[in-house]
Length: 485
Ligand code: ADP
Image (cartoon, rainbow, N blue to C red):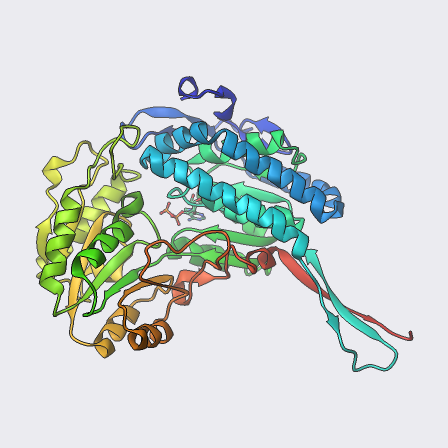
């Protein structure tokens, strides 16, 4: 991998603890594969429990000085980190495409997106205001201070290997908290490149650590550790539940960004072609491996057939291939199990009466690739409806009226994002209020970015990342009462 980079030192095959590149003390290792080719890209050490504890020791020591810095001093280090990400954008994108599979232009976009959170929180760190409280106690002054919560563990997924780290880490670091990052084993090299750049940016030893290992084993140590005060996780609802349970003993501050099962609602009044093109882009980005992916496309019956035609036409223009090749829209899925799961979801739908309009898997350019699938006549009994498919499988259902579509859209344990396409202001307002989702995007596929509070309701999670509130996940409110004044 390093031969493809203009700065080969960005490719590291070690964990990063207390500013040192670290082997696994037990000698255990794991290979990391390019999902497009199946080639091994490199190896990572699987750390032992004592090594995770050593990372906590280091963070505990480093915390003392990091929290004591002025906010503008932390801001400068974070901005230096941001600038280094921009400077090394191409190398970071290559690393990401190799380990994750996404097309190179998308990987470049993720570097920009990931860097933008660092800039945002660098600035937000200067605005962690407390309050002055009008006193109800005679001769007293009351108020609040915002203080860093302490060491934060960040457990991140493989679909956005860089941005899911920066969105958490920048908030924590700006708040004055050290972090221990556990990236997904599928995509560790983006995280390690971030560590290399954090070091170059002057982020002190022990403040940004990356630990690697067997995921359940490492996560258990992180959850059991009382010195870790906050845990921020992005990943599946299944793993989120495990982490929540394990964190109960130490009463951690939790931020959980879990699965989604986004409805994409198309009203009767919109141009079916415009809405269909938007739905294709909301469904197939990152080959559908996105918690915001439009999983259930709900189209008013009056324009359903036309919508399906345009959707299929747009879909047929999508190219599938190695993300390093130019003009590729969909890279591979992350691994063979993901392909198996996608196939099973399609088979289940077809066996229950869905119509397979498009998606011939014999065209797939390799074992980890899955050709985009279009299913119509999808019903709530099917897996494609109930589960987050995390694959390029689009399911379309017709509905008759707003009451029905609200019921259909909310018929899921998830509540992350919903899309609405209509120009009728009354319908917009009604849906906006009735949809049980943390985020509702009306007439726009793009909705995320640093200024917005990203997060879900129901079993899509707890807390919000980004925006003015994202930094609160890493801050405690300390109330003071100055009496006898
Ligand atoms: P999967 O990789 O099984 O789809 P997730 O997408 O939820 O699971 O993974 C997100 C993060 O959770 C990754 O860093 C992964 O290594 C970690 N993880 C996976 N399984 C567990 C587990 N049983 N306990 C703790 N962490 C886990």
